[in-house]
Length: 268
Image (cartoon, rainbow, N blue to C red; front, side):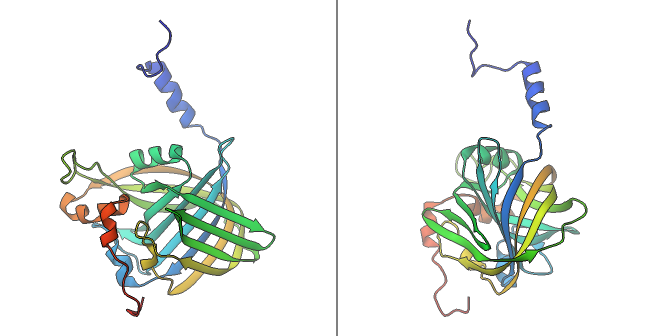
């Protein structure tokens, strides 16, 4: 009988696939990162327990083009600073990716909030524009001019992200199993880094309402060439009841049309 590709793989094939995945070469990306301070109460409001606000109400937008061989990828994220126990890190709210292939592993393994979207990173001389878009709306846009080089870190930089991994219940009520909190530790190597003078534009989108995280003070904008490896671990099971009010962050729910933007003139 000819090989049935949907059939079971042998133990040797499974082991070979696992070994190949563990020996990936460095994959470099060119990306723009913008960090700003927002309103402390707004940042606190998006954090599911047991996450808590960090000392500063920071928001980070990362927008990159990844040099996958024969398969270029656009990847982005918008995250807020957070803490868990005594560890500081970032809690991503949305992670647009340009290909389905980039979604499945991150969502199913780590619980990353990845969604299909459009990612733009453009550089023309000293002029830079980067954007994240979904549903025809560029809900984050970073624009500016390269000011000059920044010193490179001598060693890989470690960064911590927090994710919640869960499965919505089959009957539509709650979860099938208890959700878990995942710590994902990334080691980032940098081979080029430059400072950008510019601004961050947040546009209203009912599906990606990052406009709520208003730019109160711009901290920095950079463009760089980086490669990253990551490893994750489950640190604890979390309260399903406490997490349930936040799971709409993960999905494009048609009922989000009821989540109207704040009226103008409220100070945001």
